[in-house]
Image (cartoon, rainbow, N blue to C red):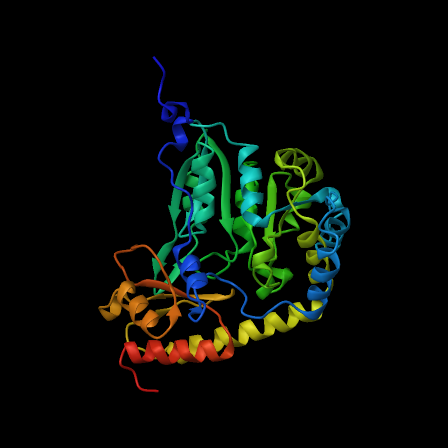
Length: 370
């Protein structure tokens, strides 16, 4: 008697659905809506990036190489020895997948994540058979604080990876550097996600830890400050021996010819990066200040390209806010219920006009006069 095909699936992946971003699907179906929900950069690619797209688009019939040129540039920017310290991927999501799969033994090992955090950690961890261990941030005085002691206390003999975003997604804040040292000294593989670090500057990066701690791996992406979310380019930084081993999990030619050379053009165009960072940070300040006087609305300070809110103290839910914003043509991002509140939502920095529309909409919803 034959067995049904479902019994052939690995036990830990049964029932896990395909990851679908409903808000992104909605934005593509209705392009007239304002995409203020996915931490995208609202500014289009620079002229130098567009030139690279056209140049290497004409070479799309050729397989890409190993990316030695762009990896060397990334190493140079970060003060590392060379391309052997850099692994590139099809967005940072693939980078996490490669890192996780090189350490995790299915249905045996644990990954510690500091929540709330980027959902991809859990998605990839579960698919690889890891048990996800959540260490919640501490919500106190209208601020979400990191809990390094909680992370250290969560370590067991089964802990294989600790992952922390810095600045954190969705809270937008940094953890103090000394706590990264404490975690690095455990020797456990320590993944530090720096997807948004460029908005605050590379002086906030934990890359110097790589030279002292072989277990530290830094991940980054060009989807945010560089504005190349649609081209899918991410990378990992680490000790050359560690990078060499996790690179073994890469699919051949995982980064295409076009995104590889476009990434190099973007990394070399530091003027364009500076302009995007300046625009973003000014708009973060504008929204934060414009909504700070709404009674009961908690506005979290952000060093990224998004701002987190908790409207629970106002007596409203995030669902109400999201529905009202959508009626005004704006897609926002809701957050799950936590800390006794179902009022969590997030806005991505949009164009200047979109940001002013968002402020007007939120003030209108809460009945606050300008």
